[in-house]
Length: 194
Image (cartoon, one colour):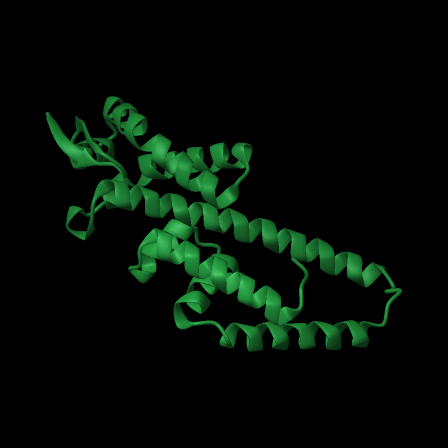
């Protein structure tokens, strides 16, 4: 049975994903194969955007697909579309992987810091860092609200221009222009050379 399914982009004609998930929940391997063919590409694309490492992205994509196989029975159609559910799983897995890698790096840094005697004045470095952060905050306050929101979402929260535009309900071109203008104002305020 074919129905139109929206898969981020133009309309796509293929199997009914809800029906496939229902079959997968009962262990239907053929249904899982068809479901895999439909969702693996978008899952890999999302995971790759978060992780940026192809090998890790492939690994996380496989973990998501295994999770899909194991948890298909938990899907609830009234709570949303299959693709949204799967991509939410993928995003969570990718973010978990980033956090795990960051925690490992933090542990390594802490261990190295305990073993290493600094050759610089820690207090001076801390004061300098605090002053720089205060200057950045002060300069951010000088931006317009849209510039500040756009820059903060893109550079501190890691969203793409398109994601920022979608979340702010603002055209992509406007967000790009405001962000460019905001970054120029920040550069000038911070006294950084072009």
